[in-house]
Every structure is written in structure tokens, then in C-alpha cells.
Length: 323
Image (tube, rainbow, N blue to C red):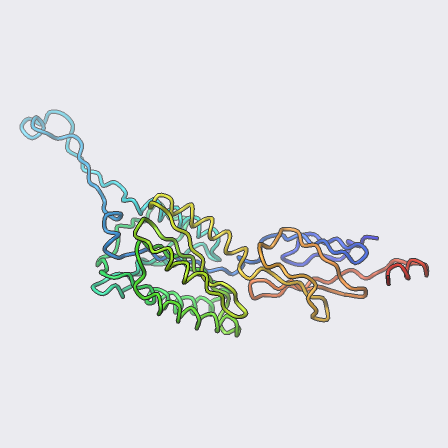
């Protein structure tokens, strides 16, 4: 017998219970609630060509210079290879971010590659107005730890303002020169996440071109941490124009896979664990007499009351139910 008079609570839009079988439909994906996104773009010297803006001239010429005949000279600066990709990524990530704007910065800048040049808190809605000419000082090394520390400091401030999870997208075109420091910091971050002193965080690393050390990226990203699983994921694009599409795929996969979800009964016992993508419809069995279930996902819990059993069974039916 079905009971549907119990009102669904967020994030559920529909609830159906029949003979201990629960079918709960999600109104939206709770894994991206309270999500704060960031974008860090490689500012090392090897990226200089990709950030180069070509100037083209039209009109002018000999007759114009002598007699003013023809079209006046006009110079136009064409977008560099990074700019359209950065705009697309920013616009996309802003749709996931809790307030539609995100921290954008160049990393691996300066003489020793340790500098981070923050562009600002950019809104996805204003993406057409932004230029990405590259950092003021291109770096001579690709040093990642300072960028992670910069983002973590920023994210802790965002947590005070209500952020419940974070994700930083990092783009690189070369070998990372401080991989050991990155792994050490990642282990420290994972311990904080597991202890509940820092909300769930994810790092998405996208390599571009044939200078990327994919074995190194795999070494960083395949590390699993107790109680957390993976913090990192990565892909490699052959050229810069493929980056935006890869970022979108990785963000979608990561932010729905991040830790999956777990369903508990009203006594705290696990009824079902989703290790992969959280489906739009959750189906599971509850024990007899169970009054509610709780979905834990992304470090947050959602408790949904179940309708009371108002059916009047005869003894045979009750025996079948107990069976």
C-alpha cells in the first residue's frame, strides 16, 4: 500500500513509500549546494605564446597617408588563445557557484614561479567584459603549492560566509616543479576534511599540450585519503581550445561523484551507500517501524519523515510483512 501524504522536504520533490520500499526524487543535485568555485590559470613563461594578442591593421596605406584617399587605418587586437576558453570556463563555473562569481587568478608567476596574481572575483554574467592578457610577470618555474595556499585561505573566508564545499580548477601546460609539496599539502587538507574542520574540497587539474607530465598528474590525482577518497582529478588536452570542454566534463563528474551519498534510517543504520554519481531518484528499503530516513551528501544531512503506517492488515498479512 502506498503512502504519499507526507510532505517532501528539500532537496526532495517527491516521496513514494510502498511496503517498506522508498522512492525519493531529488528536486536538485544537493552536491553543488553552497559550492564555491575558483579558476587558476598557468602564468609560467611556457604559456607566453598562448597569451599573445595579435594586432591586425586595416585601411591606411600610401594613398591615405598622402591624400587621405581610402579607408582610415584601424588597428584591432584579436583575442589570444586563452581568452575565449577562460571566458567560457568562467561562465560555466559561475552556474555552479553559490553566488555566480568566482576567484580567478594566474599562478606560477614571477621570477621563481611562486607568485599568484589574483585577477579578482569575476561574475559569470559579465564574462564578455573580461580580458585575459596573461600575468604581469610570467614565471620561470611551475610551482603549484602557493596557488593552493592562496585558494585555501580564500576558501576559509568563504566558509565563514556560508560556503559548504569548494572546488578549484587549475590549468597547466607543463611539469609541476613542486609535486612533493603539493602531495604533502593535499594530505593535510584531506585530514581537515575528514575531521570536519574544513568542508569538502576538490581540485581539478587540466593539462594542456605535449609538455605535460601525465604520469606526474596521475601520481597526484590517484592518491586516496582515509575518510575522503580522492581530492584531485585530471585530464590532458592536446591543445588550449579543448580545455573548456574538458573542464565542464570534469566538474560535472567530480561534483556529482564527490564522496557520493549515504542513506541512514532513524536509528543511524546505513540503508544504502552511493559511491558514484548520485541518481535523481533514490530507491531503497526501510525496516518496519522506521519513521524517517536521512541522506548525507557533501557534508550535509537531509532528514525526510516517512508517513505513518495507517494500513489495517489481518494477521496473515502481518506475518508476511515480518517474513
